[in-house]
Image (cartoon, helix red, strand yellow):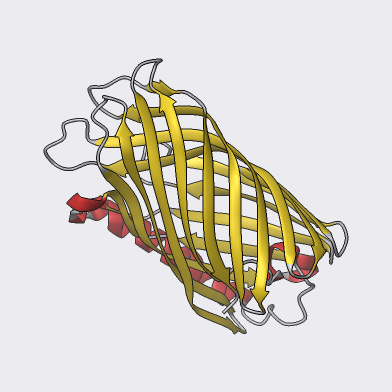
Length: 292
């Protein structure tokens, strides 16, 4: 309880200080590729399947993935910008590799961003993502966690923006992770996102089509397990390489398709069980998304 209060108090203090110090600096800010692009879905629903991969060359693991999310509230004020969304992600283990994987894990969370625009194209973004990160069928109050992030952003020019920052995960094994990279709108047809941990190239031959290829480096997901499981927590680690196509059907509705390869995979339990490697596997994902 005290740790949660300290995390919330820290985030509130930083946001309040930034808001009071930077009030009035939001007007006439230069266009920022990271903060101002409006061609990514505000809401989405996706379902994916990860094919069989052997665990340490023995039994196999396969997964069904579901992701749903939507923006809830956005406001741009003299003191800064506020953006609130809700997201739900889940992984169901169809085959569990004979290592006692839970049936289903996931995250149910709110995600709040506060952005303060500074002079000369600089901006400060603070994010807070309270939610349940746990075995879906065994939610408890102590499964509520409070990840937060602090990112510095610079719009070098209208076509190029930089980002550097840290994401914090209190009570997790991965306490801090870096975030850094550049977004370059090379032309009306080509966009480069060279970030850690996610990088992507987007080619738009027409306004209604987008072709994507990218890599998600060292993805980590950590979930609390049910109280009767003495292993306490499950951590999954992987890297994903993919090719995708988006088709805009109407001005506010797009169909999304991804196919790729999951590599460098492992599962780890915090207590009483060693890390286990999982073979590479193919995955496929389909979904819909919209701007409003």
